[in-house]
Amino acid sequence: MEFAIQTSGVYEDVLAVAQFSEQRGLPAIALPDHYLMALDEEKAKTTPAPDALIQLSGLARDTDRIQLVVLVSPITFRHPAVLVKTAVTIDRMSGGRFTLGIGTGWMDREHEVFGFPYPPMAERFDMLEEALAYARAMLSTEPEGFAGEHYSLEAFPIAPQSTGQVKLLVGGVGASKTPRLAGTYADEFNVYPGPDLGIRIDRAREAAATAGRDPDALLLSSAGQVVGAETEADLEHRLDSLAADAHMTRDELTDHFEKRQTPVATYDRLRELFAAMEDHGVRRFYLQGVYDPDATPELLDAVSRPNL
Image (cartoon, rainbow, N blue to C red; front, top):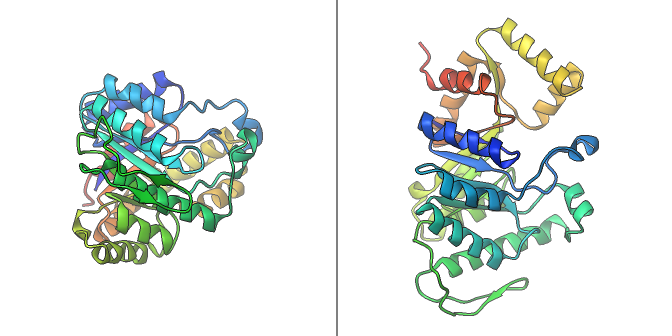
């Protein structure tokens, strides 16, 4: 299992995480694409939410080796032509290191605040599928058109072309549609932890085979906040500190983590959990949450070492 970091914040902070990741030899850095960066209404008013794609353009020039990933961009924010044009630009600026993640969008409040249309989920999935097909057509080396209910693309030569290395990522918690779209169109399937993880992976692989693609070429990744410590006592102390920092009770914090399938365990147990995910074919995990210059390297060291 390889580990990467998903982070957010002002550019100076994001760049510091990217530089740490390169120095550490991590494979990628991922940024979330949100116009509000907190679910809590009051916290959202003061938490920086810069444009992720512009920040990734900066990282394209300020880093050398690391893969740059947007995890993920809601199709409700931008027309697929804008997404793909931006992806090709970052791809060329970075020397072929960009992965474009596209999703349905899920945070109601950011759509309300900024006035983005927010159709029902079924329609957003239709938009997502069309956007993925549109992106595949636009990234093709030969002019390809696309005609759908929401989007259309003329079979017209598009310049500049990608270096051929723009990757598409589909991620989410959906049980059926998300795996099908990932297998049909994506290079990477970001599948969130959960008891049905193996089932969702199997569905993505089946969809890839049905589409005439190689299921083994699909990069399987996962993501989430991970809370760990060396001992149970250390873990309890860590949870108390996290609850206090978040102005939550321990019960509220526990409920928050359970809803999001957040791994909370000793380091030994975390390594077992990641090994089980690896048995399902998951090869990369994006560590989410606030980057801590002390805690994050410790966590990476702990989850990367083998159990004795």
